[in-house]
Every structure is written in structure tokens, then in C-alpha cells.
Image (cartoon, rainbow, N blue to C red):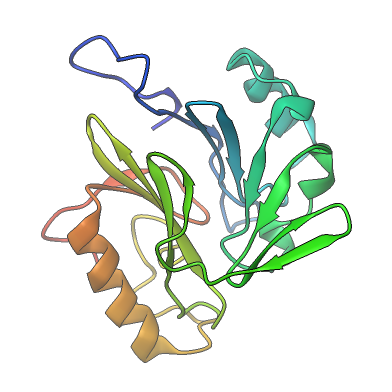
Amino acid sequence: MSGRTKRASPPSATDPRIDVLFSGYTAPHVAGTVGLIQDGSRRIIVDPGMVPRRSAILRPLARAGVLPQAVTDVIFSHHHPDHTLNAALFPRARFHDFWAIYRNDIWESRAAEGFHVSPHVRLLETPGHTLQDITTLVEAPRGTYAFTHLWWDRTGPPEDPLAENSRLLHRNRARVARLAQWIVPGHGASFKVGPKTLR
């Protein structure tokens, strides 16, 4: 998926809009996939990490009609720099991870599991790649999208060489594949869940 999500029918004013601002990769360099979700009054960035240059995030954000200072929320799937490095681009956002919400000097502890960032966006605790991983689920007209690092890209890999807990990773892949129709992986283009999707 690149650009605005295609729909079979005109979107409702209450439907979330999903954009992939940048599709990541792991060779020959490393860059993370960066997402934008617009849901009601919330403008949500997922994983503003390593990219070739900041304009790789800012230009598609501008094309989506969103200024950096209008971003209300930033979600980190986990705390590796390739998914967090450009967080400071969004000065007015609150920041979400697996156990808290942060804004300025306020640390609000909360569990991620089941937390609603906005009406159609909720978080799941999905450890595996790291023990602090979370997945962002978006309920959209075409189905549920999962922004997650349980998969690097559509090929998996079958075994994550950096996984802190492979058993949990496979268990959570199966869980997310039951809940979502589309995967937005940590380092690749979006793909549709199917029988051949690695669990």
C-alpha cells in the first residue's frame, strides 16, 4: 500500500484514513516503515524511525495535508532507533509505547493492551521481536490493518534473527493474523494476510 488507501466506495467522514509515508527496508541499509493514521481529530504517526532523510517523512506527510505540529500522537512499536529516531519532528504529540504515554515532562503509566488511541485505533501487546513490542490495529472499511514488527516484510523472515523470544513472536503472529486482514510490517510494504502468511 502506498499513498491513500483505495476504497470500493466513497469514504465516510468518520472512517480512518491510512497512509504509508515511507516503506522501509533492511538492505543495503536500514530504514523503518512509517505510517500515518487520521482518525477523527487524531493525527497518528507510527514508528518515525530511520529514513534516508527527514524529507522522506515530511514530504508525504505534507501531501496528506498534515503539518508536523498537527500530529497528535506518535506510537513506537518498540524502542529500537530505526523506529524512533525522528520522533522529535512532532513537537506537540503525545508518545505511546508498551507501558506509558509521554508528553513534555508528564509520564502517564498504562498498559498498552486494549488501549484506544482514537475511536478506530487500539494497541495490542505483542512481544517477540523485543519483549516490549506493541501492534497498532486500525479498523477500516477494507478491513483491519496491523502496524507491527512481528514481520519485517511479507517474507517474514521465517525466524527473526533478532527476536528476544521466538516462541512469543510466533504466537503473536498467529494472533495478529487472526485479527487483521492487512499487515504493515516493520521494514517493508503492506501485504494482505492469507494462508501463506508466515505465523
